[in-house]
Length: 210
Ligand SMILES: Nc1ncnc2c1ncn2[C@@H]1O[C@H](COP(=O)(O)OP(=O)(O)OP(=O)(O)O)[C@@H](O)[C@H]1O
Ligand SMILES: O=C(O)c1ccc[n+]([C@@H]2O[C@H](COP(=O)([O-])O)[C@@H](O)[C@H]2O)c1
View: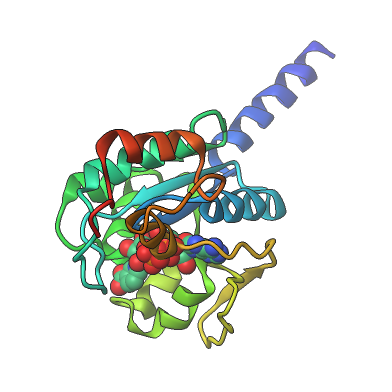
């Protein structure tokens, strides 16, 4: 009897060690600044797909857009930290900020998969990025490294031939562009970003002269 209990326990430990991969979402972004839309999509995708964790990953230099107007990565990373504080299944991934240069997702995911062989990755992107996937660096190889998860975004129709899992989220019509514009015009951003992010923006005087 005791022997079989021990055998069962040993079998279970072996199964957990070798078989069960952690399901980890990644929300990559410029986060210039992070806003409620980011938090909503991360939370709802995690909930629907049963993710153990979502890593918010600020880039260093965005690979495809003119970085003019993107404030220093250290500010964007601190704002992400402030935005996710208090949610135990959100965390920050600083690999791209530490590596510097253009943040190509293919390079990042190769590195992360080497560092965490027991993680299965789900890379979350909004509809605008889903439509842009054909232009991503080494996209045909990248789709084999991660599971892409696409979410709806107001004003964006989704069209893609790439393997993307769609998760329907509550429409949140908020963008970093609009928040920067509001700040430059002296308009309120309250409830568009978490309070600690707004506090950081005002303390540091970010975006006021855009
Ligand atoms: N309101 C939203 N609904 C759905 N997806 C979103 C939303 N906001 C951002 N995303 C997605 O989150 C990721 C990171 O977004 P990013 O940091 O570039 O914010 P953004 O609001 O798109 O910024 P910007 O307006 O400066 O382009 C992207 O994949 C983007 O599509
Ligand atoms: O690797 C690429 O070619 C690539 C092209 C466009 C976007 N990305 C990544 O997609 C994420 C969202 O990008 P953005 O510009 O919408 O913040 C962010 O992690 C980017 O680094 C990556």
